[in-house]
Length: 402
Image (cartoon, rainbow, N blue to C red; front, side, top):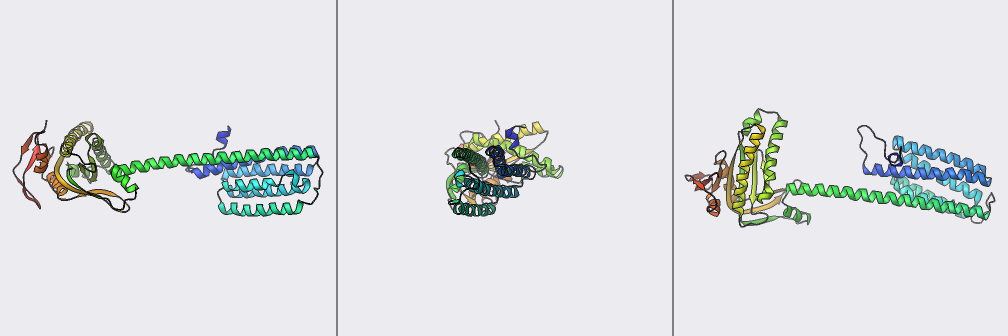
């Protein structure tokens, strides 16, 4: 097993680890391994200077840190393992200062503990360990500043202990800094991923410019457009299809077809407003105004008819689509607090819906308003004036294919 895999949490069936657990696991393993190595070398140093009791203490310390590593790796027990390690460091520092005096520098391991304990999960325990450790550090300074050590060692040995302490301090701080940098990088990466997801979701719900205004905390988004074109499309025979197929296939089929409509939006510079059951609503000339909105939406309508034919051929189905278009002034805005909805209102929208319902399968039915804007670009079939609810008799047209 390499170090990288050793520092990864063990796999648990049906359990995914979050970033915090990875961080705690990695840091705990590194700290306990470093502490184990430090105490392992101290065994031989104390034996070499003739202080076997401290060598035995360090053997016990090695066992404590091995047990702490076991607790973390097998049970992700950060609480008990960190308390156990904190107790060991404080007790070890007190015994070392008792035998060797303050000049040995072992009391400063307590201050290192105060640094690293905040990398563990339980903040309350970290605060309690900090308070206890700082009080313990002050007590050691008071008790042993004037008191002679119980075991005499040479100045060279004191220098060795100080060198050992300084090296250990550098290693611990370097590891803490590495873990901090790792956490920052991982957190920034996750934030960027979540930001991108939120951006994509917002773009799928709202027009880009409207989404930007919402992010700027604009309280009310309501715009009036003097000229825009609205399209409603409705699938024929879909109700019968829905009653004779299973839900999964139904949703899959509708999603495939509507996704093909979505793919046509950008290239035709039209804006999807919403779907209503098996109906599809788009607009052109908003939120970015356009002088050719009627032409854009008519081109899109023709592309929809072609997409339905391709879909039927591919899926072996027999759908047809009825399309209605109207042009005129429109009010657009965002409504809702929990689920934003960008919607359109006005007489232009109502007439566009009537154009769809009074149209014919496989036909693009246009109002006179839209016809006047594109009459020189397409061929039309003039219909007898239709009585439209709320509007009376209106002149309408079918767009000729080709």
